[in-house]
Length: 214
Image 1: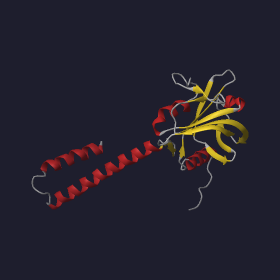
Image 2: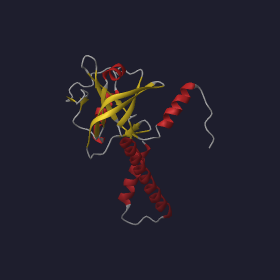
Image 3: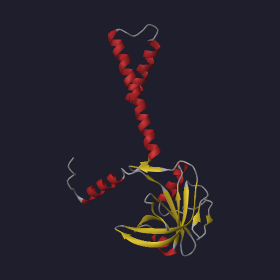
Image 4: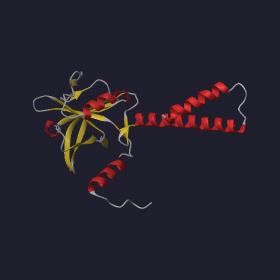
């Protein structure tokens, strides 16, 4: 297959982002404290491991993010790898401008970063390096404490939570199976092969055809 010809910059950026979305990732919330000790957090899917010795991880933050100053000045952060049941929490911290911590229970970690009690995994980090990454900054942290739970993680793929995509795919497959069943039943009617006593089943199939067409 030949690579797509470049189009206008906006379309090219969108196509590049869609291509990157083919890579499924986990979902994390990174937290730290602002200079006035206000808790700060943001949803991120750019988390990755770097090294086992010393234990290093990284994630990236948009330069336009309101929380950028807090993360780059605090000297520490915590990364929470979210469980599959924490989609609402992910959505909350993906929004900007709101008081994301309102009504949430948290405690200060070893370095001061806000910690949540529920997670698939959690890493408390001291910031070791900060790198330029185009329209993002890349933060590398040395892990000073971590913990993990044996629970399914929250996954993100092609611009949506993976579980939601799979549910939609399964629903579409169910409808397709029903359409095939209706088609086979209609073929039997056309051939005069419908067994006696199946009239009610046939009426139910016809009602389903009407439902699927709406």
